[in-house]
Image (cartoon, rainbow, N blue to C red):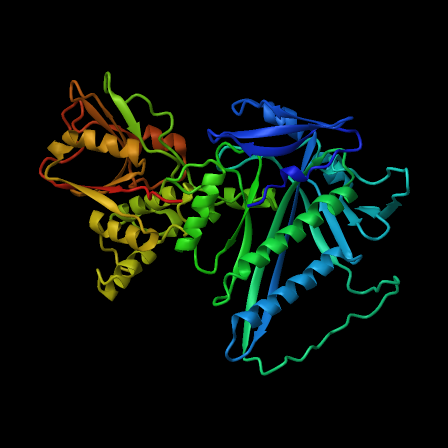
Amino acid sequence: MRSMLGQSAASAKSVDVISGISVDASGNVEYHLYQPGEPPNIELLEINKNSNDFDATVWRNLSLLYCQMEFNVPLYLSATPNASDYTAQLVDAVEHIMGDLKSSRVVLLAKGSSAKALKQGVVLIQPFNQLKVQRETAQGISGDTRKEGVQQSSLCSDLSQPPSFFTTSSGVQLPEPVELTIMLQQSSNANGKVTAPVVQFVPAAENATTVQILKLSMAVVCMGGSQMPLVDAATDLILPALRDQLAAMKRVAMKNTAHKAEVCSYQFCPPGWLHPVTAIYDLSHGETELALVEERKNLHRRLGLTLDRPLLRTANAVCLKNIEAVASRTSGTKRLTDVHVGLINSGVSGGRQSLVQGSYEYYHYLQDRIDDNGWGCAYRSLQTIVSWFRLQHYTTLPVPSHEEIQQTLVDIEDKEPSFVGSKEWIGAIEISFVLDKLLGVSCKILNVSSGAEMPSYCRQLALHFETQGTPVMIGGGVLAYTLLGVDYNELTGDSSFLILDPHYTKGEDLKAIKSGGWVGWKKAVSQTGQPFFLQNKFYNLLCPQRPNTV
């Protein structure tokens, strides 16, 4: 775990910067303010997390810097590879990359997101080449050399102020970072003379029959003063952070000599943290592997986070690269979410509402160009439930299609191969099998012998929503629904059910969905005497259990 908060340097105008963070005995995150002077002073910064104090105090004077690099390192091992051979090649490869990051061949491209930055274009930084900075504009490339006593280079604020904010999945507002891309000059030598590219051949000491690719995905986040020259940000923050992270990745990779290590760094903004923190994982085993679970638990404890839900899985990671491109690409395919919000009046007087916790996507008939009208309601309810687990970051698996759901049931030998591609119904039992197989999620099933008995299960359903918070699939009867909550008066027994109906066949029109009753509060028996739950049919209430894990 690495937070680059403590890497900030005093700017040219001595703007106060955050110099450190800590977690007190109660698990609260504390921020410390560095005030330059003689002597310098470090004081505790009082920040109300429910206000805009952090934005006003920090991001006005700081710039968020982000740099990402990937390396695919080939390791040539003998027919009977051993740990020492693996380690020796790994150390040699990492030292080679370290040398490149310290060489004069390093060139960085800095790109900002502010309106001012878009006009300026891309800034070219050569940190070890006489501290020369160039700016690439529509008119060409202009250069200015930093001479002693002269501050002519671009500043971080040129690319980051005023900041443009985006909101993370945990509700934290972050400024869009200044993105730095590292390149290596391959066509010139130390004397500055242009040379042709060179291919180097190094014969193996013995026959190498195994080529193992070590994948290193690096990403560092730094916070520098807004008046800090970009050259200083590159030399004092970004490059040292990359070298430190590379050394940490080497230690992680050396623990895994028996598998193809895939060491990646991710940025997170867990609840209570107002800036990104970085964690390094070896994903070659998968996120559910016991060692990674224990590692995440340790990180949760160090950061003062709860241990009953995932906050530092890869699905929780914050994307800091090409934020606008990711947002536009996602918005075009995004379904309606949380369509029940705003439906307050349930018709129950003096009742207590217990609702789904977290977000979900509304899946219904005829989506994805699949004509499942008349047979796909349970499939759609399952897809809504899986979307809840995705949006709560319990999984990175995509929501399964109808055919993938059917194939899963065939794979566990619950259905015959001919089931794939059919229009056969599924129910609560099949959905529980799929959730267990794909997500490792267990389910409780409440068996209701008649629709008339549904109100008597409100107390159990309220407890489910208050403790588990997952959507409930209503099967049996004739049609399948998704239950999002209940409103129950324990004194009078009056009750109402918040139903999400997957039988909707029109477009993604929230107003039409609400006005048409496709999501809304339903009484077991309406005021006109019309039963919503049929009295001569049985019902199965599938209650997915929230995994108690990190």
